[in-house]
Amino acid sequence: GEDVEQSLFLSVREGDSSVINCTYTDSSSTYLYWYKQEPGAGLQLLTYIFSNMDMKQDQRLTVLLNKKDKHLSLRIADTQTGDSAIYFCANPSGGSYIPTFGRGTSLIVHP
Amino acid sequence: DAMVIQNPRYQVTQFGKPVTLSCSQTLNHNVMYWYQQKSSQAPKLLFHYYDKDFNNEADTPDNFQSRRPNTSFCFLDIRSPGLGDAAMYLCATSVHRGPNTEAFFGQGTRLTVV
Image 1 (cartoon, helix red, strand yellow):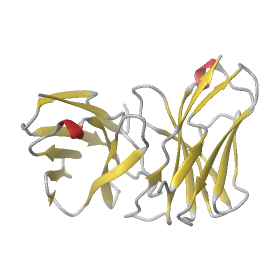
Image 2 (cartoon, one colour; image 1 turned 90 degrees about the horizontal axis):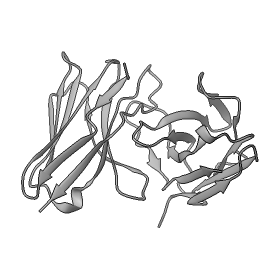
Image 3 (cartoon, helix red, strand yellow; image 1 turned 90 degrees about the vertical axis):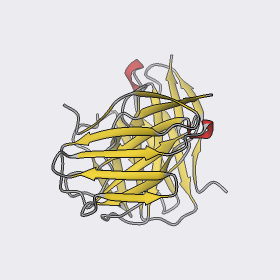
Image 4 (tube, chains in turn blue, yellow; image 1 turned 135 degrees about the horizontal axis):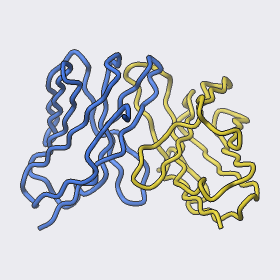
């Protein structure tokens, strides 16, 4: 299987919460990341979490890390149409500190 | 202002005709990366430079080469593009390689092979 796995699509209604999930295989990383890619643009770092934390909150974003299950999630509260994008989970693997990306989850926000 | 700039945004090349994609950065970062992103797939690292030190991924085809003449510029050369090389090519930079290192991406070059 892939080193980093994500579901491909998520559709939510504007104002609802979105939860994007990711599982990974390499647990040696010190940090795990979420990147956002808007249409026609490159990837942009959205948030990250230190591996000895279970949760990190940053305004509308909440990152949850379950190290035992190697599961990372990104929750976006009060999702807006401007949040429509592809969200990539990234896990620097093999001790190289170079991000290894999942396939990305396309978040579609509809009115 | 854009910090990682890729040119061109769209490139069409003929099957087998060498093509070069370029990337420049104004961040003075030590590390520059090239990723290949095919539709609905994860960005796949092709290689990276740490300063002048070139690091090739084991599964990067020999058809792909890279040059970094100075800190600011990095080029991706595809010697004989095949139809399977059509993809978005992403350039990224980081100040160093470390456990908490943000990568800054350009907008990508979408390569079409005809």
